[in-house]
Amino acid sequence: MNIIVSAGGTGGHINPALALINEFKKQEKNLNVLYIGTHNRMEKDIVPKLGIKYESLEIYGFSKTQIARDFKNIFLIKNAIKKCNKIMDDFKPDVVIGAGGYVTMPVIYSAKKKNIPTVILEQNSIPGKTNKVLAKNCDLVCTSYENSNKYFTKAKKCICTGNPVDLKINSLSKIDLGFHKNKKLLLIVSGSLGSETLNNFFISLLSKINEEDNYEVLYITGKSYYDEFINNKSFSKNIKILPFLENMSSLFYDVDLIITRAGASTLAEIMQANLPSIIIPSPYVAGNHQYYNALDLTERGLAKVYEEKNLNVDKLYKDINNLLSNNDEYKTMKENLNKLNKVKSSKIIYDEIKKHRVRYSMTGRINYQKNSQLQEQRILSIVYTYSHSETQLYSFTS
Image (cartoon, rainbow, N blue to C red; front, side, top):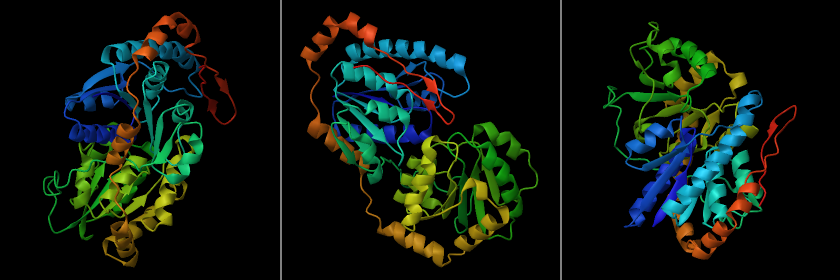
């Protein structure tokens, strides 16, 4: 079986893609995987190291401010689609899966034009623009939240599968990182790319934590902000600072409390690990989707949420100490997490793909080749306008 998987930009898209690839590897004896990502973001380093064949596309997300780059991007998208067309012809995938990020747009579009079955994964409660556009006539859309399905009424099929995670139990322990076995561990992470706002706030928070607090702290800054912290001499000895931690989610089983953004993949992983959390949703994301991701957990008594605009060092420090003292709120979170029905999302998605997959049709391929010149003329119609609040993206002719 040949599959193409595309995802890019952040760990929130890449990790579910890798979890699904691992599920396919478990289920398929003769599997060929090709991963298509960006030429300049984190997946270009992560994926090849895993021994997965990688193709890159030069493409950027549209913005509200960089108009010149956006017009250049129109031509880059057209070139990316041409490259994807050749990849589809050469690799002959049985199915093409997009797990989020703007890089998936030319990949899914090309597959649809060549009558190759297409699948989209939507991790967030409020879908991104790219997935909304691509879902039209997509063979299968897999969502992480039931309330997301209403956005995909034009897809041939849409089901809530949950978000694929692939936690490796006991592959990384706090002892491996130099922490004490019998002390509680607080993990603080501000997203796979880091956050300037949160880093500035956490400098003040970490300065309050001292050795009298009977727990240890691991703070993952993100590579861009590490130098600001490593040179700070005011932090207590029970605090360790790292720029990045590979396979960080495998540490979750050895953590007592996490402070994190509300990326859908991270939330899925902490629920899988029964890990109580304090969530600070990023307000800088499309549709404020992180807030709604976090809201789902708080409504089920699984987490505590702070909006970034309401952050207060003293209050958060007090909440950390109360939760790590195993208070009633912490016990309730833990009990509710243990009660969750832990579905194997990657297996559900795999089964759905196998059940409904239509094999790559040579008839469809021949028809595409006969009409290639016409397709090139119609391949990209971009309607690109600016409003006061947001960029209205692209639409495709069919």
